Length: 249
Image 1 (cartoon, rainbow, N blue to C red):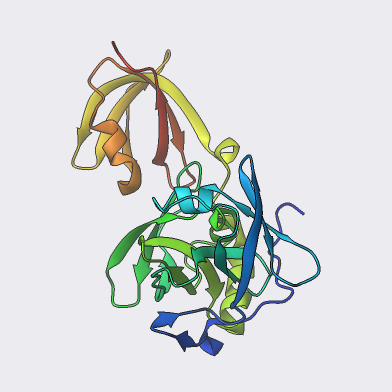
Image 2 (image 1 turned 180 degrees about the vertical axis):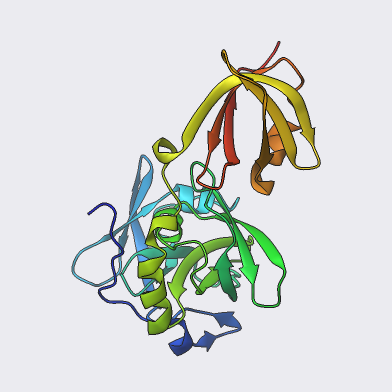
């Protein structure tokens, strides 16, 4: 279902626990199993649950960990929705910690990174695990949440803080991180490269316009020079959240 906040089965962060130095969100559990077969981009794991689990191979690849192979004993962390959070070989070092805060801004296109405004007032930037992107994207900007960070400093799970936060999230739903197609697209020529978080672009047939650039994508603009043709993706705060361009030879 599109455009709604799914609240059924919500379990809140304050019920979580800590095991072997790892913090976890409430409802998470660890399932052990044995890799029976590796085919293509997934591994088939017998967990004794009756039905096998199929693990995406990119979960370990994006962490730089060795690929799974037949016979491996694995520990699979799943959340309260029975979705995969993390996968490790039995005995392999792992470390999860919780970060309390709010999304400081909409996610950039692709939902690969997030900026969290923590309760002490600082901001933290984290990559988002491929398995957690849709869940993080469902959290509205400004809603109190607890983010689970793994040993690679990436977000692997998230949950609301409490029922009051869920109620607030319903009102903030329109600020949920949008898909790329929901951004305003501005095509034009870059007139002023990135300086003090700002750029200037002249759209076709229009006057030059200045835009503030979100911190997460400023690195992209550092390689662009005046005269470059660009397509900006601009959010509802009139800030640039992504850019497309053709590399100059």
